Amino acid sequence: MPRARSGLVTHRRHKKVLKLTKGHRATRHSLYRRAHESMLHALSYAYRHRRQRKGDLRRLWIARINAAARANGLSYSQFINGLRKLDIKINRKVLSEMAITDSLTFSKLSALVLAQVKE
Image (cartoon, rainbow, N blue to C red):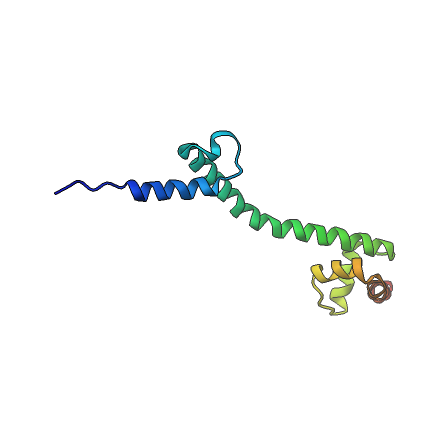
């Protein structure tokens, strides 16, 4: 019985890894062993940063809302607290977009909240 050789399977696996590491520097895109290490790191970073992006965007939205709220005489915490008391359920992403694109509506919303805070 002839011995089984895995040349084709190995070659395909190596080609797959080298294709994934295209664009990496130095030998990390051309030598299989280095490329494999590079690929594992890159994939783990990609996985981790997909989750990190959610927090990054939330921080960005909060910064935008804070700037717009302060322009209308409120702090971010006062604004959010006022929205809760008024039972207005708009998420931070929408509030952020509203602050940028539709500042008139955001000002009206801030006026409602300001009246709530003054009481």
